Picture 1 (cartoon, rainbow, N blue to C red):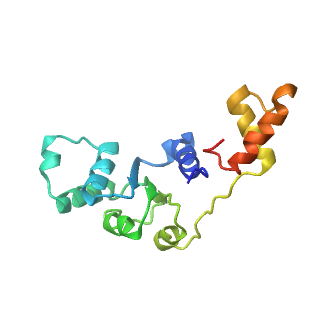
Picture 2 (cartoon, rainbow, N blue to C red; picture 1 turned 45 degrees about the vertical axis):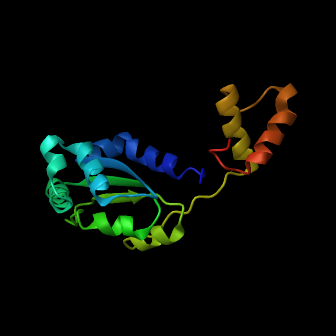
Length: 170
């Protein structure tokens, strides 16, 4: 946790090119206690009008509505913080494969989840930052520039060392 998976996925998702390239985009946070119904509603909230009637639908009807809303359209779905393969299994059938360049981004701290959900391309494994990159990030966040004041250099290096390259800790 804290290595930057969500930050990287969000940077890709929010990129201006992605906004123009994909007709439909949706971002949902799955987490450990995922519920099929809530994931589907989360997707629908991102690109469709969700009203009181929508909440009365069964899970199967919601899955069908997601499928129909995506069918024939180039979409980008981001599923953040997926903890197990069942979360992928319950929603993947709602994502039509029209061979039109649609994509699903899935973040997980568990390698087996990424491998399981992969459609042929290998998962991207995140690494901790080097000491140099950690210092730069820390200094940008704290001082608004890449270098810290000379009198704080020793303390900065101690703090950065304790963070062990985790961007969230920095």
